[in-house]
Length: 246
Ligand code: ADP
Ligand code: MG
Image: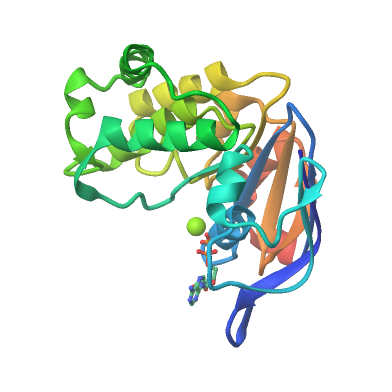
């Protein structure tokens, strides 16, 4: 699904990502943990094609194809999705209309007909219910006045509606209470199949325990310094990061 080879990147005058190698196969669930400011969100941004980063070297292959020159829109249309650490509000843009437009843009790119409005609404409302948000959210502006937890749940609704193959979730668990955390984990687990791949960025084992990932990676100073299984997330919570620096 995804192959990152010797990726180094940053912004003007600053290297943020330093020689990252990562392979994510179909059906795999990867977790990335790491200190604040270590480059986790930057990695997600670069994978999804956000502008203004400079790629110093390396390769990003998605479904076997080098995607470094593709726009974020093209990457999304080919099945990539990222939920934001800090979702922005777009007052005045109806949230259901926003997602329907995105769904239809992807369908158009894939030479499919637009989704039937009734089918879309039905599915959207089912997903609202799954995320424990009431129907009212369909009428509100995108993230407009949503609480922190509601924004994170709305990111999951976007994932469910857009139906991507590679999902990058950036701290989707941060700021969630225990019930919301279970709802979000449940939404992610329901969406998992043997054909979909996930990269979850998080600081806490709390969400990891619900997701039983295949791999946990630790990033420090822009690179992956250690990879392991779920136990690594538990060790990290017990010991912090200092032992890894040695
Ligand atoms: P993390 O998600 O691991 O907390 P980030 O990827 O958000 O870290 O940031 C890594 C480092 O790169 C930080 O020091 C951050 O300030 C810096 N950085 C990221 N993007 C930019 C940018 N556009 N301009 C300046 N600095 C940036
Ligand atoms: Mg971040």
